[in-house]
Amino acid sequence: MSEKLQQISSSVLPSRGASANITLPGDGNTLIAQANVVNMKSVYIPVVQTNGVTLPTRRTVNADYYNLFVIGDETFTGGYFIVPKKCALTESITPELKALYAKLDMDAIAAIKTFPAIFAGKNHQYCCAGGNQEAYLGFVNDISIQDNGIRVSFHLLYAIPQSRLNELAFEISIDCASAFNEFDSTHWTIKRINIIEKLRNAGIDALL
Image 1 (tube, rainbow, N blue to C red):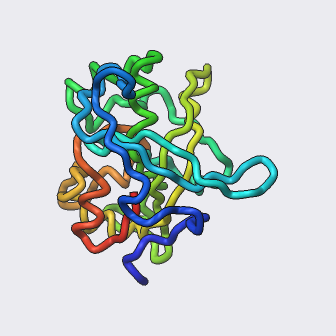
Image 2: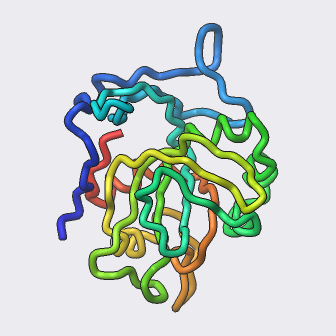
C-alpha cells in the first residue's frame, strides 16, 4: 500500500505555501487563549457544502499540538462520534496539557479546534492494525458535553494506513509497551508534537 495520504475531496487545495499566512499575537491577529502558540497559520481546506459543492475554507491551525482520538470500531462516516467521559483527556496526557484542556471550557475548545487531529479505531490486534485499516488526518469542528459522553464533530482530510502510525509510534509520541500501545485503547488525548512534520519526515505527504 502506498504511504502517500489518500486525499479526501482534495481538488480545491492550493499548492503548498500559496495560502498560508502566519498569524501571530498582536493587533488584528488571531489569538487563541491558553494555546501557547508559536506555530499558528491559516490554511485552506476542502469542505463539502450543504448543496454538495466542495469549496476551500480558511482555517486557523496550530501545528504544535495534535488531537489523538482512538474510538473502538468507529469508521468516522457519520460526521460525529461520542467519546466516553472517562476516556476524554484522562490518560496518556501530560499534567500541563490536562490542566489546560480537560475542563473543556470555551477557551479550551477554541484552542482544541485549531489542532490537527488523528482519528483512528482500535487496532484489530494488540499493536497491529488490520491489513486495510485506515486512520484519518483532519480537524475537530465542534465539541459538546452530553449526558452520554463528549460529542465530537469532525472534518476528515486524508486517510493514512493505520499500520504506518503503529510503526511511527515513537516518533508521534504514542505510549507503548512490548505488546500494547495507545491504538489499542479507546481514548482521546492531546500531544505536544507537530504531527504534520512527523508525517512528512516519514515520507507521508501531508499538504497542510
